[in-house]
Amino acid sequence: MDSHIRELLKKIVALQDDLATALHERESQVLFSVEGGRIQFRAWVGDAHRRVRRNVLRWLTTDRPLNLITGPVIYAMAIPLAMLDISLAMYQAICFPIYGMSKVHRADYIAFDRHHLGYLNFMERFHCEYCAYANGLIAYATEIAARTEQYFCPIKHARNILGVHRHYAHFLEYGESADFHKKLEELRVALAGKNERQPPARASE
Image (tube, rainbow, N blue to C red; front, side, top):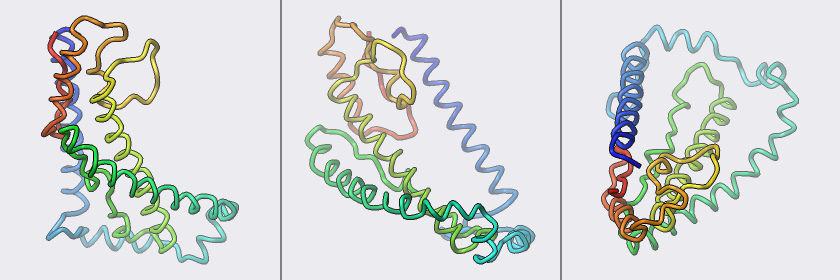
């Protein structure tokens, strides 16, 4: 990968971060503020939320009742998810210090804040927090696996694949053997003290 492509990748990541920050700031200025770690909605927003909220009985009878049939299947997934959560914590605690890699912060990926939304009833809030946990945990696991891949085998695949993680663009090209072990070591060193907000370092060419 030449220097021009590396610079473009850095700019893309920086622009994505800037856009996310700007959108969040705009939304918070209009709808809510965070004071002492607690979310405070504007008075008119809170009133609007309460007017929209459905009571649980009405919600159960009008919001696709057939969805209730799948409830046991969905919430049974809490068991493997919890096991994955525990396994990830153990894996990071044992292996990452040996590899010299900075740990992935779980709180950066899993956020429980939808219970503050006044337009959701108890069941809807419960569903939302469960979704937040499941999807946040998978994203957390993806980042841990991605750093592990960068440490052991940062090589792109021969064909294009969907759903690649953010480190993948900086991996070595498929079949790129020149100075492989030197570049591999550089990519490993880059994982120490990693900043979540910055793109992964790429081995020099």
